[in-house]
Amino acid sequence: MCFIENERGEKVATATAYYDVLGRDRSGDAWLHWVAVRREDQGKGLSKPMITHTVALMRQLGYTHAKIHTQITTWLACKVYLDLGFRPIPENLVHSRDGWRIIKRLTHHPALEGIDEAEDAEVLKSDTE
Image 1 (spheres, one colour):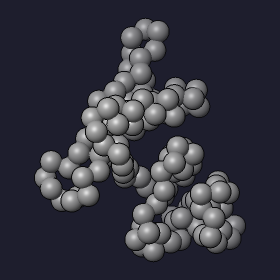
Image 2 (cartoon, one colour):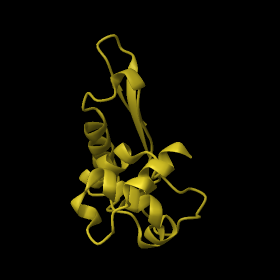
Image 3 (cartoon, helix red, strand yellow):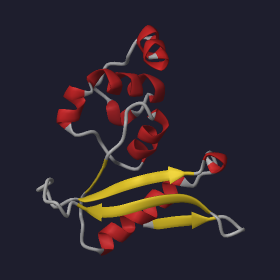
């Protein structure tokens, strides 16, 4: 577990590196988990350095690939992960197609090239559901 502390020693951001000890994921990949920044500290540029540091620790432990669970409803987090080189797995693009179309619409991220953008009505509908 990694943390960022503010000048008062309060933990304001965290990320966890782990591997699947239960053996459900047979890929041998590391997992990035519980990435969070305290609400009042969001927007200060903490998430990318936190994730980068945690992934560097994974590399030091010998992992060459990492996965992260995220929700397409947290589109800003999805953008951060895309910016850092994470990509949706193909089966997720199929099972969560509409969500990724919305992410594409909100971020216009070049990593999502080939995914059609959601229409305004689809984005607004998902916001209210």
